[in-house]
Every structure is written in structure tokens, then in C-alpha cells.
Length: 586
Ligand SMILES: Nc1ncnc2c1ncn2[C@@H]1O[C@H](COP(=O)(O)OP(=O)(O)OP(=O)(O)O)[C@@H](O)[C@H]1O
Image (tube, rainbow, N blue to C red):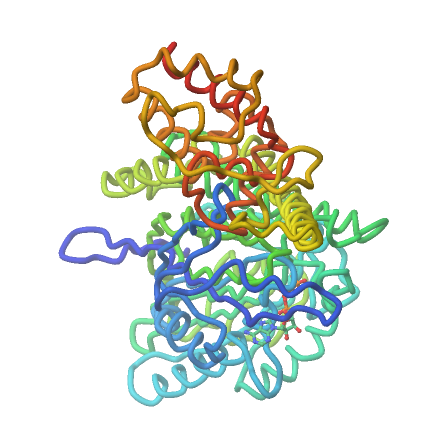
């Protein structure tokens, strides 16, 4: 019977954190697309920054275990993020590498690569074969390697090594090992042997063309490499598993143009990735509540890889183009959460009876494999009541983990999943609107410039300054900061507007200046919400202000607000009065 042997470290149980790497693929705008430049970029080998959707003049920074920039080679990704965990599977421990990220961001490139630029999968398998070979020569253990390969397509588990297979069940044994009865398990004698099975099986994977990626993976592909070692003298047997996972891309159907079957696939993909994110949230919350592993096949299978027993590496692939902003932002937040999950590796060991055919663990029997034995076809499915998944989740109890999780809670947005998803959608929508308004502002400014040239009015007036009918250039007067001249400091005022400004003369200059400073501060650094908290600034005006800021940077004085499209002299006066009076009333 397989049993867990915790790794000891001076008496204390050793835990292994999920390592999170982020890989940014090179900028690849199509010729017919606007070249807006990247919205995300690397800072150094661990840090990156993305434009802040709240204020496009700022960036949000993220810290990860590793950041792989556009120029990072496949070899470098493998060496720094994957190779170090591979020796564990020769010691009966589990390891997993999975690529996560939006559609078209480079997951398949990272995991599979091409013949010229092989990715993580071929490199890792080659390395495992090499490690086993070198071990065989020196220690007292016999090693064997086996492989299984499956995809989860539309919530169905399909055997890629046996293309006509039906949906396979997922089970869990008493030791909480995840099993797939009936899944093909093939012995691998060398890398060439692996390739012989792997290449044709990969062609069985479901892919299709979407607007965002010509050859988009429509399924999650999971390659399992199992190393079984048996000690020659004592017949102890240890089984280590390596999961190499290429997840299907998260995608926004409004942008992929998906319809019909693509839409259904996409629904299943997004559901499983959403569940994955819920699982991560649940693990992070540190509460004893149910971790929703069972809500999707993907999370059920990855149960061992997240918050479980594996040495895990998550490579989050992101794309630099603006059209991916929303996806990139969510992927980075997801990755930031996963970074704080702590796994607890253990060694899986059995004792076998000498001189008898090596006893297969129940897991092997159910998975239709026995390490060194030749490929075994499906066994009859065994129906078993599965224990509560929450009982499997053990690593959050440690105080250090709790501390990290509490820190994470503070770090991440405090709203619920659904709210967060909606909020992120709003962000994408707001971003689009700001972009449109920015275009309008530019158009408005060029018209104003043209008008001023035609009328020969170039007396130091900013081209974008324009009030009344959007065509008359703004004629600002220099700011004179005395009470007596206060009426003059803003705009050329007619009698009515003078009356409008009379209220100011009753106020203390210091109070006035402080209020103006406060307004200027909000105009320059306020988020959409903060801008909308100003009197007389609605959603559209706030977005216009954000757009203006993106083009010109900071407002030097509050009067610059007059340069924003639609802000007439009268509106500005009324805006100032409303905001100053309201600030005083607080
Ligand atoms: N680091 C990189 N260097 C060069 N090209 C890359 C890189 N990453 C991705 N690409 C290219 O970008 C395109 C999309 O990448 P890929 O198919 O790997 O994305 P994906 O995330 O797997 O998408 P999907 O989820 O839709 O399957 C491919 O043409 C790929 O070759």
C-alpha cells in the first residue's frame, strides 16, 4: 500500500511554495492594427509593471519569483523555472509545471515550442531520461519511466494516447491520490521512445482558429510522466509524478468573435479557469470552508498540484499588446495569488515482496499502469465514495502560511469573485471609452489649432484652449493672487460671470487656495471614481479628464480644466464654485 512519507527537515515538515514565473511574449501587432505600444514591460528579472487602469500616467508593479522578458529563450525558461524541480520525481515526490494565461499569450510555445525552439515538455522529459540513466548506473535502485497524456475538452477527460477514448472518470484513492481509471500508461525507454508516442498524440489535441490566435488550444493538455524506483535489496518502491500542463487560454468572447461550438468550448474553458481561480482564492482565504476542486475537471486533476503535494511551478504567459490588457491584468492578479500558496511535498513509498512480480499500487492498477510493465489497457472503473476535498487541504494550518494568506488578503482586492470579474470587465469598458474620448480630444485640439491659424490668433494661446462652441481659443489671463483682482484670474468674464464669481470675494484666500490645491490634486492623480466624486463631474467628464491626462500629463493649474473638451468657461466657474463650497461644507 502506498503511503505518504513526509519529508523531514530536522523534525520540521518541509513545505514547498508554488514558484510563479511570468513570461512576456514579444510584441506582435498585426499590420492592420494600431501600434499603441506595449501596456506591460519588465523592470528586472523579478519585477514587471503594467499601465494602471485607474490612472494611465502611473503603472502597477508586480513582483514574482522570476520574470522572463521578451528576449528570454526557451532554454533559459527551462533552466531557471523547470529543471530545478525535476530531481524530486526521482525521489518519489510529485512535481508540476503548468502554463497559464490568455489565449495567444504563448502557453503552447512555452510548453511545447517547435522543433527549432523546443519548449518545456521535450526539455523536461529529456532531462528526466538523463537523470534516470545517470542514477541507474550508480545507486541501488531500479528506475522506470512511464507516460500518460490527456486533454480536458468541454469538461470531458480524453485520452490522447488512445484517440477513440470516451470521457474518462476521475477518482481519488484512500491516500488522496488522483486517479483516472482506464487512462493509457505507456512505458518510456528513452527520449526517442517518448517522442514516438508524444508527437502523434499531440496532433490529437483539439485546436481551432479564433480571432486572437490562429491555432488556439481549445482544451487543457496534461502530460503525466511517472518515475517508479524500486530498491534492489529492500524492494521499497517510490513513485514520483511530473505533471506538465498546457492550459487552454482564458478568453473574452466579445474579442475572440467566438460563436456556436467555439462559444461552447470557450464557456467550458472559462468555467474551469474561473474555478481554478476560485480554488486559489479558497486556499488563500485560510478558512476551513470547502475548496471547490470538484467544480471542474481541471481543478480536480490539479488538486495535487495546487495546495497539494507537488513542487509546483506556474508559468503565467502574458502578451504586451493593449488589446490583451484586461486578460493580462487578470492573469497577473491570478499569478500573484498563487504565489502565496504553500505545498507540502511528500515521498510516496510502497514495500514490495521479493521474488514476486512487482506489486502494483492501487493507483497503478486503476490508471492501467505499473511503471515498468508494458502498456496496460483500461481497467474496470471502480466506484468509490470520495472523501471530502477540504480534508485534503492541510497546508494552510501552519501559522506562517496563515500570515502569508492574511497578507495576501490585504494585497488583493477585497471584493468577491463575481464582483471582481464584473469590476475587471468595467475596467476594460472604461479603458475603451477613455481611448475613444482621447481620440475625440485630439480631434478637438487639432480643430482648435487649425482655427487659430486661420484666424491668425496666436497670441500665446494654447492650441487646445477653447471655450464656447468648441472653436474659440481660450484666452487665459495670468493668475493674480490678490483678493482685489480675484475675479480676473480665471477667464475673461462678462458681467454675469462676475456675479457668479462674487461668492469668492467673501472667502478667506487661504481656504480658497487650499481648496484649489485639493481640486488640482484630484484632477492630476484621482482615479475614475475619485474624479467622479468631484461636484459636476460625471462619468463622461471624468473619462475625458483621464484621457486628457494620458495625452498631456498633469494639469499645471485648475484653469487647465478649460482645455478639456466640453468644459466651457461658465461650466468651469460653476464647477469651481460647487467644489469649493462643497469642500467647505464638509
Ligand atoms: N516567446 C515567444 N517568442 C516568439 N514567439 C512566440 C512566443 N510566445 C508565443 N509566440 C508566438 O505567439 C503565437 C501564439 O502563441 P501560442 O499559440 O503559444 O499561445 P497560447 O497561449 O498557447 O494560445 P491558446 O491559448 O489560444 O492556445 C504563436 O504564433 C507563437 O509562436
